[in-house]
Amino acid sequence: MSSSLRLILGDQLSQDVSSLQDCDKDKDYILMCEVWDEATYVKHHKKKIAFLFSAMRHFADDLENKGYNVHYTKLDDKHNTGSFQGEVARLLEKHAFDKIVVTFPGEYRVLQDMQTWEAKFCLPVEIREDDRFLCAPERFTEWAEGRKTLRMEFFYREMRRKYDVLMNGAEPEGGQWNYDFENRKPPEDGLHVPSPYTAQIDDITKECIDLVADRFPDHFGDLYPFYFAVTRDQALYALDKFIDERLVTFGDYQDAMMQGEPWMFHSHLSFYINCGLLDPLEVVRKAEAAYRDGNAPLNAVEGFVRQIIGWREYVRGIYWLKMPEYVDENFLKAERDLPWLYWSGDTQMNCLRQCVLETKENAYAHHIQRLMVLGNFALLAGIDPKQVNEWYLIVYADAYEWVELPNVSGMILYADGGYLASKPYAAGGAYINRMSNYCKNCSYKVSKKNGPEACPFNYLYWDFFIRHEDILKRNPRLGHSYRTLSKMNDEKIQAIKDDTKRFFKELERA
Ligand code: FAD
Ligand code: DLZ
Ligand code: SF4
Image 1 (cartoon, rainbow, N blue to C red):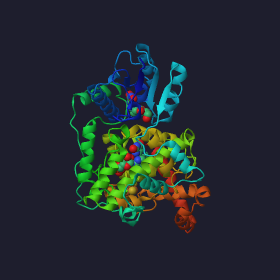
Image 2: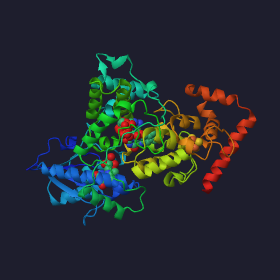
Image 3: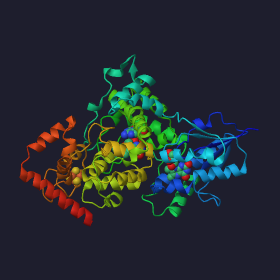
Image 4: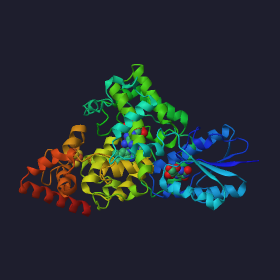
């Protein structure tokens, strides 16, 4: 009787994941395993581990209730080998299988491991496409071929056409592809942000939280409050809540940051989309339906849809196109060690402090916090891309290398020399002041450009452009910055350099 082993990873928790298609409930076995290697190859945020273990356990229960043979290894099982490979080997010893079936993993290192299994186990290993993504790596490669640099906008338009999202025949809905120019409202005093989705902690989740507290005490992050959805039903509820309560204002305040409001009008769905509890296209279709029904404006829905069928697919395409070299990219030769403040939040820079502390509490920060505060500082300070990547992979519950690495090396650090983004997203304090209310509670003065009281972003910004003049000056999108720089006198340039030197001296002492 032919029988196959179906391995399902922690970020493949979808009933229609390709490795489950044609799974025979009588003959085949599903393997899911909590393994030490995955939980510690970087020291993931405690909340991320508890979330994934609980979602995995709930998913395994669902499959069992549907009549599948599920072999589930818990972290503390006596015979747990600690790795995917070891757990596959253990199940192969117990049962005779003719093949192993897996869905294409989200990380290169896991794929590399899987590619050795056929020889190791003397069994065919079928690595199936992950068709939860809308653009297969081969299609992306075809699209990218012959282009020296890539631009998300053109890729996004193709995805809109292909999946018929917000289209009006052959034309984009409303006549324009992109409504970003409407999505830059600063936060206003008294702005009411709805409360985010909060799931009840059930026995399974409680067990996972306790396990993580016990086994990973030295990992970063808080376990409580724990609010994540851990089942598909809960994730669907979180999706509906976003569509009903936040989507309408998502566009307007997409770039806004407010002290004490970590969730703003974002969806907080990346955890669920990335681990499989939600399907990206179903999320997009629901948002589009809200627009068609007159419940959300076009700028909000287009902005939201672009993040998912545009950016999300685009960064994944770049990941698989550019791996394995992408991890080593360091175009700007950034070498500074990651400052301790990224773990402790211990800094007088209020924007950074807020973003780090919220990350620690929630395993979440919204896009602009990740990009324009935490990322902007890493870029301007010239922090080593490997260390920045590791930090982002650790601290966010939605982080897997396929999505984290291009966002960090490509989007924030310009480490790929402009392959993903057309220019570095560098900004001074004025941007943060315009888009947030952090500066009101800061010991530094955002209006001051130099001296010990000045907002460090102000002089770090110019020092960055001075440091990299040789390679960045030729970028036409940076023409304005370099024209301004060329008008600065020697005294001003020296003040920028002196302030930067003093700032890093103090940072190293901290
Ligand atoms: P929303 O603002 O509600 O956006 C909707 C959805 O769009 C998200 O759920 C996500 O699926 C998708 N999305 C939006 N922007 C991006 C993007 N740039 N790349 C890919 N998908 C996107 N996202 C991750 O899922 N995992 C990561 O590890 C991750 N690391 C990041 C690191 C940096 C430096 C930056 C700048 C961005 C990173 N992002 C990452 C992208 C983005 O910040 C998060 O997807 C988003 O903050 C998740 O919150 P949300 O669900 O509330 O998003
Ligand atoms: C992130 C993660 C963690 C912390 N633990 C596990 C685990 O124990 N078992 C598992 O199957 N998956 C886990 N994951 C998710 C994997 O790291 C992820 O599937 C791979 O990185 C491929 O994307
Ligand atoms: Fe951040 Fe500068 Fe504003 Fe302080 S003054 S919150 S450091 S941008």
